[in-house]
Length: 114
Length: 114
Image (cartoon, rainbow over all chains, first blue to last red; front, side, top):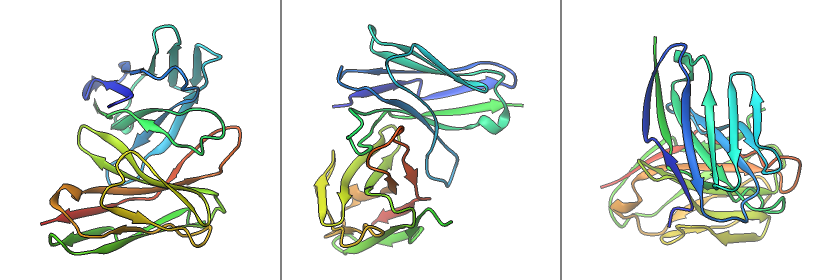
């Protein structure tokens, strides 16, 4: 049972465009929602994260939008660059004592064309 | 600062063989975990540990064993390899509690079971 569902599976964007990746979760106990970025041949690395007490978090060109009532959150990449081409994973976990027992989405392969 | 080190990077096994995937971290993290990554399925938690001598099962533990004798090391053992265990395996670690639950990933082990 996939508790965090991610879409789309793949995404192609032109340089300078906006990339949008969506995730939906089922467990209302989730209270930490990170996004991880993975380049080919590398392990995932934390990109940005949000807790449900805020509806939006922005770090540079990356923004997480969070809709608690809809149980959805999304990653927006503004002014997308070829260097952003990677696989992106959303994730969710419960409580600060969860020990990082994250549940990951299926992943989105983003390609930014020059 | 090495971070999370996984060995080997690549491995080919025959069905029924056993092997151990090694993982070591030098950040004094209490929490360590193993994930497998399969196309279209994201990262799935196999086993995790919240400290030396303490391990627990994740989402897909069957066919794998772990132990945690030291804070630094968390090996993953395949008892009798099966083709279904062909995957990319990632070890990850983090502090158990803190302001964020940032997981640090190794660079992965690509395993093929023939």
